[in-house]
Length: 371
Image 1 (cartoon, rainbow, N blue to C red):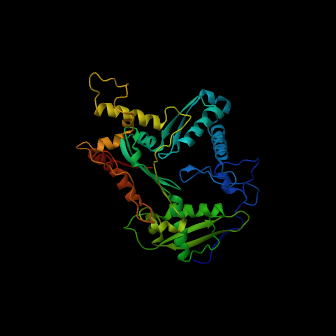
Image 2: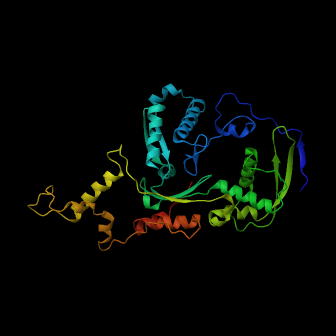
Image 3: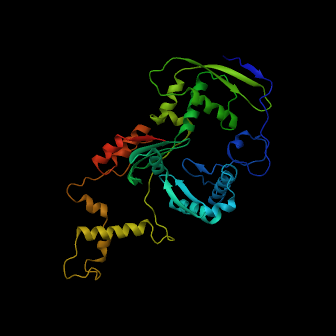
Protein backbone atom coordinates (compact mmCIF):
# COMPACT_ATOMS: atom_id res chain seq x y z
CA UNK A 1 0.00 0.00 0.00
CA UNK A 2 1.47 3.30 -1.03
CA UNK A 3 -0.42 5.33 1.56
CA UNK A 4 1.05 4.90 5.05
CA UNK A 5 -0.93 4.64 8.27
CA UNK A 6 -0.14 7.21 10.95
CA UNK A 7 0.56 5.53 14.29
CA UNK A 8 1.57 8.50 16.46
CA UNK A 9 2.54 12.12 16.04
CA UNK A 10 6.13 11.61 17.18
CA UNK A 11 8.68 8.86 16.80
CA UNK A 12 10.48 9.76 20.03
CA UNK A 13 13.67 11.62 20.75
CA UNK A 14 17.34 11.07 20.00
CA UNK A 15 19.27 9.42 22.82
CA UNK A 16 21.06 12.03 24.91
CA UNK A 17 24.65 11.15 25.68
CA UNK A 18 27.23 12.70 27.95
CA UNK A 19 30.95 12.42 27.47
CA UNK A 20 33.30 12.18 24.53
CA UNK A 21 32.91 8.44 23.89
CA UNK A 22 29.76 6.40 23.17
CA UNK A 23 30.00 2.62 22.78
CA UNK A 24 27.68 -0.09 21.55
CA UNK A 25 24.16 0.08 20.11
CA UNK A 26 23.63 3.50 21.64
CA UNK A 27 25.75 4.89 18.80
CA UNK A 28 22.89 4.08 16.40
CA UNK A 29 20.46 6.33 18.32
CA UNK A 30 22.60 9.47 18.55
CA UNK A 31 21.56 12.55 16.63
CA UNK A 32 23.72 12.48 13.47
CA UNK A 33 23.99 16.28 13.62
CA UNK A 34 26.21 16.02 16.71
CA UNK A 35 29.97 16.28 16.35
CA UNK A 36 30.93 12.61 16.66
CA UNK A 37 33.25 10.43 14.57
CA UNK A 38 31.92 6.88 14.24
CA UNK A 39 34.68 4.24 14.30
CA UNK A 40 34.38 0.56 13.44
CA UNK A 41 37.62 -1.06 14.66
CA UNK A 42 36.94 -4.37 12.87
CA UNK A 43 35.80 -4.67 9.26
CA UNK A 44 35.45 -7.75 7.04
CA UNK A 45 37.10 -9.91 9.70
CA UNK A 46 40.26 -7.77 10.04
CA UNK A 47 41.37 -4.74 12.02
CA UNK A 48 39.96 -1.74 10.15
CA UNK A 49 43.25 0.01 9.37
CA UNK A 50 42.70 2.75 6.76
CA UNK A 51 43.89 6.22 5.75
CA UNK A 52 40.95 8.15 7.22
CA UNK A 53 40.28 9.61 10.67
CA UNK A 54 40.97 7.01 13.36
CA UNK A 55 42.33 4.53 10.84
CA UNK A 56 45.86 4.05 12.14
CA UNK A 57 46.75 0.85 13.95
CA UNK A 58 47.28 2.78 17.19
CA UNK A 59 43.81 4.37 16.91
CA UNK A 60 42.15 1.03 16.17
CA UNK A 61 43.81 -0.59 19.19
CA UNK A 62 42.74 2.37 21.35
CA UNK A 63 39.14 1.90 20.18
CA UNK A 64 39.29 -1.79 21.08
CA UNK A 65 40.71 -0.96 24.49
CA UNK A 66 37.86 1.51 25.12
CA UNK A 67 35.23 -1.03 24.04
CA UNK A 68 36.65 -3.90 26.10
CA UNK A 69 37.17 -1.68 29.15
CA UNK A 70 33.59 -0.39 28.94
CA UNK A 71 32.15 -3.92 28.70
CA UNK A 72 34.28 -5.18 31.61
CA UNK A 73 33.31 -2.25 33.82
CA UNK A 74 29.62 -1.77 33.05
CA UNK A 75 28.47 -5.19 31.80
CA UNK A 76 30.59 -7.52 33.94
CA UNK A 77 30.93 -5.18 36.95
CA UNK A 78 34.67 -5.82 37.21
CA UNK A 79 36.92 -2.88 38.18
CA UNK A 80 39.80 -2.40 35.79
CA UNK A 81 42.18 -2.32 38.75
CA UNK A 82 41.32 -5.99 39.43
CA UNK A 83 42.24 -7.28 35.97
CA UNK A 84 45.64 -8.43 37.26
CA UNK A 85 43.75 -11.21 39.07
CA UNK A 86 42.00 -12.37 35.86
CA UNK A 87 43.13 -14.38 32.85
CA UNK A 88 41.85 -13.63 29.35
CA UNK A 89 41.14 -15.79 26.31
CA UNK A 90 41.46 -13.82 23.07
CA UNK A 91 39.42 -15.30 20.21
CA UNK A 92 41.17 -14.50 16.92
CA UNK A 93 40.13 -15.15 13.29
CA UNK A 94 41.13 -18.40 11.64
CA UNK A 95 43.02 -16.33 9.03
CA UNK A 96 45.18 -13.93 11.01
CA UNK A 97 47.98 -11.40 10.77
CA UNK A 98 50.77 -12.28 13.24
CA UNK A 99 51.73 -8.63 13.64
CA UNK A 100 48.19 -7.73 14.69
CA UNK A 101 48.08 -10.63 17.16
CA UNK A 102 51.26 -9.43 18.82
CA UNK A 103 49.81 -5.93 19.17
CA UNK A 104 46.57 -7.33 20.65
CA UNK A 105 48.50 -9.38 23.19
CA UNK A 106 50.50 -6.27 24.14
CA UNK A 107 47.22 -4.42 24.59
CA UNK A 108 45.75 -7.07 26.92
CA UNK A 109 48.84 -7.73 29.02
CA UNK A 110 50.69 -4.41 29.16
CA UNK A 111 47.99 -1.78 28.72
CA UNK A 112 44.88 -3.37 30.23
CA UNK A 113 46.83 -5.36 32.81
CA UNK A 114 45.45 -8.90 32.59
CA UNK A 115 47.37 -11.46 34.62
CA UNK A 116 47.82 -13.74 31.61
CA UNK A 117 46.28 -14.42 28.24
CA UNK A 118 46.28 -17.01 25.48
CA UNK A 119 44.98 -17.06 21.92
CA UNK A 120 42.33 -19.34 20.43
CA UNK A 121 41.10 -19.41 16.86
CA UNK A 122 37.38 -18.78 16.45
CA UNK A 123 36.69 -21.98 14.49
CA UNK A 124 38.52 -24.08 17.07
CA UNK A 125 36.51 -22.37 19.83
CA UNK A 126 33.30 -23.20 17.92
CA UNK A 127 34.10 -26.93 17.86
CA UNK A 128 34.91 -26.83 21.59
CA UNK A 129 31.62 -25.10 22.30
CA UNK A 130 29.66 -27.61 20.22
CA UNK A 131 31.53 -30.58 21.71
CA UNK A 132 32.75 -31.86 18.32
CA UNK A 133 36.18 -33.48 17.86
CA UNK A 134 36.30 -32.48 14.20
CA UNK A 135 34.10 -30.47 11.86
CA UNK A 136 34.03 -28.26 8.81
CA UNK A 137 33.20 -24.91 10.42
CA UNK A 138 31.24 -22.25 8.52
CA UNK A 139 31.12 -18.84 10.18
CA UNK A 140 28.53 -16.55 8.56
CA UNK A 141 29.05 -13.08 9.97
CA UNK A 142 27.71 -9.63 9.15
CA UNK A 143 30.56 -8.67 6.81
CA UNK A 144 32.45 -11.89 6.06
CA UNK A 145 32.00 -15.64 5.70
CA UNK A 146 34.83 -18.00 6.62
CA UNK A 147 35.31 -21.76 6.21
CA UNK A 148 37.94 -24.12 7.58
CA UNK A 149 38.35 -27.74 8.68
CA UNK A 150 39.16 -28.36 12.35
CA UNK A 151 40.46 -31.69 13.69
CA UNK A 152 41.23 -32.31 17.37
CA UNK A 153 41.60 -28.63 18.15
CA UNK A 154 43.76 -27.83 15.09
CA UNK A 155 42.56 -25.73 12.17
CA UNK A 156 44.29 -27.00 9.02
CA UNK A 157 45.90 -23.95 7.34
CA UNK A 158 45.37 -25.17 3.77
CA UNK A 159 41.58 -25.39 4.30
CA UNK A 160 41.06 -21.84 5.54
CA UNK A 161 39.25 -19.34 3.35
CA UNK A 162 37.52 -16.03 4.13
CA UNK A 163 35.08 -14.46 1.67
CA UNK A 164 34.14 -10.79 1.87
CA UNK A 165 30.36 -11.07 2.06
CA UNK A 166 27.95 -11.70 4.91
CA UNK A 167 24.55 -10.87 6.35
CA UNK A 168 24.97 -7.14 5.76
CA UNK A 169 25.35 -7.74 2.02
CA UNK A 170 22.14 -9.78 2.03
CA UNK A 171 20.39 -6.81 3.66
CA UNK A 172 21.66 -4.44 0.97
CA UNK A 173 20.60 -6.84 -1.77
CA UNK A 174 17.11 -7.10 -0.27
CA UNK A 175 16.82 -3.31 -0.23
CA UNK A 176 17.90 -3.15 -3.88
CA UNK A 177 15.33 -5.79 -4.87
CA UNK A 178 12.56 -4.01 -2.94
CA UNK A 179 13.36 -0.75 -4.70
CA UNK A 180 12.81 -2.53 -8.02
CA UNK A 181 9.36 -3.56 -6.79
CA UNK A 182 8.07 -0.11 -5.78
CA UNK A 183 9.20 -0.09 -2.15
CA UNK A 184 6.91 2.57 -0.61
CA UNK A 185 9.47 4.05 1.79
CA UNK A 186 11.24 6.18 -0.81
CA UNK A 187 13.38 8.05 1.72
CA UNK A 188 15.11 4.93 3.04
CA UNK A 189 18.86 5.64 3.19
CA UNK A 190 20.70 2.91 5.15
CA UNK A 191 24.09 4.31 4.16
CA UNK A 192 23.55 7.56 6.08
CA UNK A 193 20.72 6.76 8.51
CA UNK A 194 21.43 4.06 11.09
CA UNK A 195 17.73 3.69 11.95
CA UNK A 196 16.95 2.86 8.31
CA UNK A 197 19.72 0.24 8.39
CA UNK A 198 18.14 -1.32 11.49
CA UNK A 199 14.73 -1.26 9.79
CA UNK A 200 16.01 -3.21 6.78
CA UNK A 201 17.87 -5.66 8.99
CA UNK A 202 14.71 -6.42 10.97
CA UNK A 203 12.76 -6.77 7.72
CA UNK A 204 15.35 -9.28 6.51
CA UNK A 205 15.21 -11.30 9.74
CA UNK A 206 11.41 -11.45 9.62
CA UNK A 207 10.98 -12.21 5.92
CA UNK A 208 13.99 -13.86 4.25
CA UNK A 209 14.31 -17.63 3.87
CA UNK A 210 15.79 -20.26 1.55
CA UNK A 211 12.84 -22.66 1.56
CA UNK A 212 12.19 -23.37 -2.11
CA UNK A 213 8.75 -24.80 -1.26
CA UNK A 214 7.52 -21.41 -0.03
CA UNK A 215 6.43 -19.19 -2.89
CA UNK A 216 3.91 -16.50 -3.61
CA UNK A 217 3.26 -13.12 -2.04
CA UNK A 218 3.07 -12.45 1.66
CA UNK A 219 1.90 -9.30 3.37
CA UNK A 220 4.31 -7.55 5.71
CA UNK A 221 4.02 -4.48 7.91
CA UNK A 222 6.84 -2.34 9.21
CA UNK A 223 7.07 0.79 11.34
CA UNK A 224 9.15 3.85 10.59
CA UNK A 225 10.13 5.53 13.85
CA UNK A 226 12.35 8.53 13.35
CA UNK A 227 12.95 10.94 16.27
CA UNK A 228 10.88 14.15 16.02
CA UNK A 229 9.01 12.79 13.00
CA UNK A 230 5.60 11.18 12.64
CA UNK A 231 5.58 7.43 13.36
CA UNK A 232 3.99 5.67 10.39
CA UNK A 233 3.31 2.11 9.27
CA UNK A 234 3.57 0.67 5.76
CA UNK A 235 2.03 -2.55 4.43
CA UNK A 236 3.85 -4.20 1.52
CA UNK A 237 3.58 -7.36 -0.55
CA UNK A 238 6.81 -9.38 -0.61
CA UNK A 239 7.34 -12.23 -3.08
CA UNK A 240 10.53 -13.79 -4.44
CA UNK A 241 12.70 -11.02 -2.99
CA UNK A 242 12.66 -12.91 0.32
CA UNK A 243 14.20 -15.94 -1.40
CA UNK A 244 16.52 -14.32 -3.95
CA UNK A 245 18.41 -12.13 -1.46
CA UNK A 246 19.73 -14.93 0.84
CA UNK A 247 20.58 -17.10 -2.18
CA UNK A 248 23.39 -14.61 -2.75
CA UNK A 249 25.47 -16.84 -0.45
CA UNK A 250 25.42 -19.49 -3.18
CA UNK A 251 25.39 -17.17 -6.22
CA UNK A 252 27.69 -14.28 -5.24
CA UNK A 253 27.04 -12.46 -8.51
CA UNK A 254 23.73 -11.41 -6.91
CA UNK A 255 25.79 -9.42 -4.38
CA UNK A 256 27.47 -7.29 -7.05
CA UNK A 257 25.31 -4.32 -6.04
CA UNK A 258 27.02 -4.19 -2.64
CA UNK A 259 30.54 -3.46 -3.91
CA UNK A 260 33.79 -5.28 -4.64
CA UNK A 261 34.49 -8.41 -2.59
CA UNK A 262 37.64 -10.44 -1.98
CA UNK A 263 38.67 -14.00 -1.16
CA UNK A 264 41.44 -14.38 1.45
CA UNK A 265 43.41 -17.52 2.30
CA UNK A 266 46.11 -18.15 4.90
CA UNK A 267 49.35 -16.68 3.59
CA UNK A 268 52.80 -17.90 4.45
CA UNK A 269 54.33 -15.90 7.32
CA UNK A 270 57.08 -13.51 6.28
CA UNK A 271 58.91 -13.92 9.59
CA UNK A 272 59.19 -11.73 12.65
CA UNK A 273 62.64 -10.30 13.58
CA UNK A 274 61.50 -9.88 17.19
CA UNK A 275 60.44 -13.52 17.55
CA UNK A 276 63.37 -16.00 17.62
CA UNK A 277 60.95 -18.93 17.27
CA UNK A 278 58.82 -17.59 14.43
CA UNK A 279 57.46 -19.57 11.49
CA UNK A 280 60.76 -19.37 9.59
CA UNK A 281 62.63 -20.97 12.52
CA UNK A 282 60.04 -23.75 12.83
CA UNK A 283 60.12 -24.35 9.09
CA UNK A 284 63.90 -24.65 8.97
CA UNK A 285 64.09 -26.99 11.96
CA UNK A 286 61.33 -29.20 10.53
CA UNK A 287 63.23 -29.40 7.22
CA UNK A 288 66.35 -30.63 8.98
CA UNK A 289 64.37 -33.13 11.02
CA UNK A 290 62.61 -34.49 7.94
CA UNK A 291 65.92 -34.74 6.12
CA UNK A 292 67.41 -36.82 8.95
CA UNK A 293 64.40 -39.17 8.84
CA UNK A 294 64.45 -39.58 5.06
CA UNK A 295 68.27 -39.71 4.74
CA UNK A 296 69.88 -41.34 7.83
CA UNK A 297 73.47 -40.28 8.46
CA UNK A 298 75.93 -43.08 7.51
CA UNK A 299 78.04 -44.56 10.26
CA UNK A 300 81.34 -42.83 10.81
CA UNK A 301 80.16 -39.50 9.37
CA UNK A 302 79.88 -36.53 11.71
CA UNK A 303 76.51 -34.80 11.00
CA UNK A 304 77.96 -31.47 12.15
CA UNK A 305 80.96 -31.62 9.83
CA UNK A 306 78.97 -30.30 6.90
CA UNK A 307 79.79 -33.26 4.65
CA UNK A 308 76.32 -33.23 3.17
CA UNK A 309 76.70 -29.71 1.73
CA UNK A 310 75.10 -26.53 3.05
CA UNK A 311 72.67 -26.30 0.14
CA UNK A 312 70.88 -29.47 1.19
CA UNK A 313 69.44 -27.68 4.24
CA UNK A 314 67.17 -25.73 1.89
CA UNK A 315 65.33 -28.82 0.72
CA UNK A 316 61.57 -28.31 1.08
CA UNK A 317 59.87 -31.05 3.04
CA UNK A 318 56.70 -30.91 0.94
CA UNK A 319 58.70 -31.57 -2.22
CA UNK A 320 60.39 -34.60 -0.64
CA UNK A 321 57.07 -35.99 0.53
CA UNK A 322 55.51 -35.57 -2.90
CA UNK A 323 58.34 -37.61 -4.41
CA UNK A 324 57.53 -40.57 -2.17
CA UNK A 325 55.22 -43.28 -3.58
CA UNK A 326 51.72 -43.38 -2.14
CA UNK A 327 51.61 -39.71 -1.14
CA UNK A 328 49.24 -37.79 -3.43
CA UNK A 329 49.85 -34.05 -3.79
CA UNK A 330 47.13 -31.87 -2.33
CA UNK A 331 45.69 -28.80 -4.10
CA UNK A 332 47.18 -25.62 -2.68
CA UNK A 333 45.10 -22.81 -4.20
CA UNK A 334 41.38 -22.19 -4.18
CA UNK A 335 40.02 -22.27 -7.73
CA UNK A 336 38.34 -19.01 -8.73
CA UNK A 337 36.61 -18.18 -11.99
CA UNK A 338 37.87 -14.93 -13.57
CA UNK A 339 36.15 -11.97 -11.96
CA UNK A 340 33.92 -14.11 -9.72
CA UNK A 341 33.69 -14.95 -6.03
CA UNK A 342 33.38 -18.35 -4.42
CA UNK A 343 29.86 -19.35 -3.52
CA UNK A 344 29.42 -20.78 -0.04
CA UNK A 345 28.85 -24.30 -1.38
CA UNK A 346 31.99 -24.15 -3.52
CA UNK A 347 34.01 -22.76 -0.61
CA UNK A 348 32.95 -25.73 1.54
CA UNK A 349 33.78 -28.28 -1.16
CA UNK A 350 37.18 -26.77 -1.93
CA UNK A 351 38.04 -26.41 1.76
CA UNK A 352 37.29 -30.07 2.49
CA UNK A 353 39.12 -31.12 -0.67
CA UNK A 354 42.32 -29.71 0.86
CA UNK A 355 42.26 -32.11 3.79
CA UNK A 356 45.22 -34.48 3.94
CA UNK A 357 43.45 -37.84 3.66
CA UNK A 358 40.25 -39.40 2.36
CA UNK A 359 39.32 -40.52 5.87
CA UNK A 360 39.54 -36.93 7.15
CA UNK A 361 37.47 -35.73 4.20
CA UNK A 362 34.72 -38.22 5.09
CA UNK A 363 34.74 -36.95 8.67
CA UNK A 364 34.36 -33.36 7.48
CA UNK A 365 31.51 -34.16 5.11
CA UNK A 366 29.67 -35.90 7.96
CA UNK A 367 30.14 -33.03 10.44
CA UNK A 368 29.45 -29.47 9.24
CA UNK A 369 29.09 -26.80 11.92
CA UNK A 370 27.39 -23.49 11.08
CA UNK A 371 28.13 -20.55 13.37
